[in-house]
Image: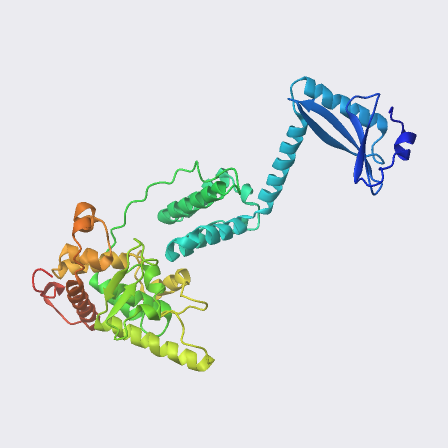
Length: 415
């Protein structure tokens, strides 16, 4: 029928049907949909590639008949030009929805999703450090949409970190951000990676080795209770990585305190690692156990999971604790990771074989890389224990001020 406002008002949905369509004889492609409940809306209909397309135009009570006819004319004009207005509208709606979802995804929420959806299967130490670094570096952006983080902002932030003398931190933070946004793109959460075009400058490898006097000074400065003090001393005695020491749990320690087994999921190279504990290292474990037992008795809770317990879980207040230690000790320009290099250098001075030192450090490069690593399966258990016992004695001698010729402990060759 030729539609008029009065006829539209009189249209009713046939009994037994949910809705019905009535098309205009005057304007091709203009229809009115009437529902069982009495609702009436205009729509445009056209055929493209043998298939019908329909586009809703709005309520008949909100749009005039004349405006509806003009809208249909415009749509049919686009179709005549080879366009598909229905598909274009769906695409626009889809893009608007995706933009709304992206805008609703704050940087903080993105990091949370990355941590739960991807980092859960990674080494815990990496997950903790990666999320901590991003949250700290971009703390002002955590509540803003993740899409607001532009390459300009990223570059400025990383440059500020590097200019503060933390070039390695800047590089790692950039790598973490690139990985986080790359994961989001792979999950269709975002479309662009603001870290992708940022050049991460190479960082010269550190060569810092603490002198015997510096080692003694730090040891003395870590006298007394406190998880950080114990972590520093355990790092000195074992040469293991910061996250591995801080994450030490009681079930990783042998009942006789002779060994500490770092499980594969906590070791940086993904390989389980057995660390023989010298007597000084065992003394630290015993002291931590007494403190843990005292805390458990006071709180009526079960014994805590971590050997070096923080306020909630493993200790992680490294930055403030390190600043305080540097102030107390007066030793500058060193990091906990330098203790690994210091111990390796010390073991060399003690006559320990390179293969044994690398086994202690749980390295898979150097003498344990390539075809040698494939066929050389000797674990060096006895040699590792002898070396760490000798190193523990050496550290005690340094701290106690016992003189030795060239500060070297004579050892049987081949250890």
